[in-house]
Image 1 (cartoon, helix red, strand yellow):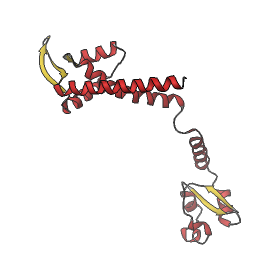
Image 2 (cartoon, helix red, strand yellow; image 1 turned 30 degrees about the horizontal axis):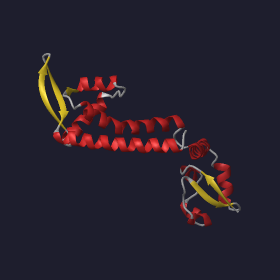
Image 3 (cartoon, helix red, strand yellow; image 1 turned 180 degrees about the vertical axis):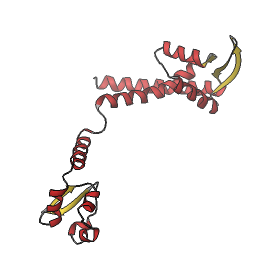
Image 4 (cartoon, helix red, strand yellow; image 1 turned 135 degrees about the vertical axis):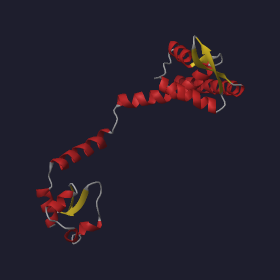
Length: 186
């Protein structure tokens, strides 16, 4: 009969159990698997391991591995939050492009999005604006207003075309989801 024993790698050295002695047992062909070794139950190494290697590290490692294999690394609230963030990420691009049909600078754009229910951090908005400008969907211009330099953004002609295509795609997705939800109500 074979048994799996979990142990910290340094415990074999501490007990004076050298690698050449380990190679004499049949388990040496199996190798390490995540901090575990496969031992024949009648092996002297098995009895030595079960007596000597039940350390705090071993117990902690076993409990953690068992817990994460059973429960995963995320609970339901974290999964929901991650899915909501993914959904928002796609919507924010369309919302920013739609808001920039009229020229605005970053702060007023952020405030307008928040007023419409799509709050966005500065750390998300400004990199998004730079990326959309690099892609040719926005144009920007520095101007002085209220004795401060502000960068004003607006849709480029290519951005207007992309926005209309994205809105069309949004309508198609929305109608498909409506059909799916009508067929199988929640």
